[in-house]
Length: 110
Image (cartoon, rainbow, N blue to C red):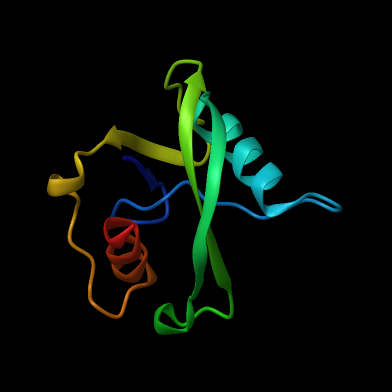
């Protein structure tokens, strides 16, 4: 599992961004991963949508499950401080109220 640590945060998270006009969620995910990591991915499915209210943000996180197809990990230095591959059994811990806690619970459940 590839996680990144943006410059503005002290923890690892998913590659994230916002869809551009007329872009599907899947297209946005592929573009954001390419821009931020240099990797070309194929979206297998949308895992779900998660409220960011516990983080005090009026956002909805839509999570796509994707697999790398090409490219080499090259981080976008302006946004990403660090990127790291994690085994599923070695993921960072997130507070239970964090959307990421929910995301990985759902991912593990299949």
